[in-house]
Image 1 (tube, one colour):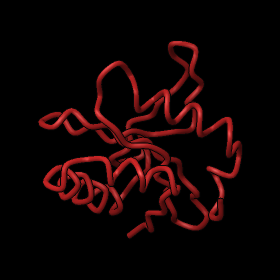
Image 2: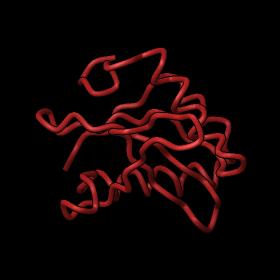
Image 3: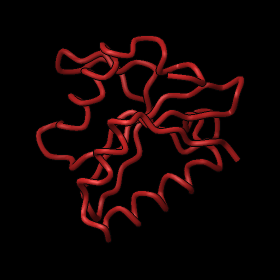
Length: 115
């Protein structure tokens, strides 16, 4: 089981969601904690890359189809930690914009155990 760590901004993102949606999102994160590695390595992670002027290479997403929520995270493989970067409704790629802005702020710290 991997450990999920949250940026303080991601905690704020979570609090903005409806309480019933929060439960679903947290349950999904717990499921992914079993194996957040990329799907190509047998995990749940869906890799992101460069798209629409955003560079999210090295980040992964969790999709919640029924509630149209996205969660973006990074991995710290040697510590078995995955860092939750952003979460929001799917519309207009908002979650990916948040993740891109936070990457610019935190830089490579998002791939480390402490940020």
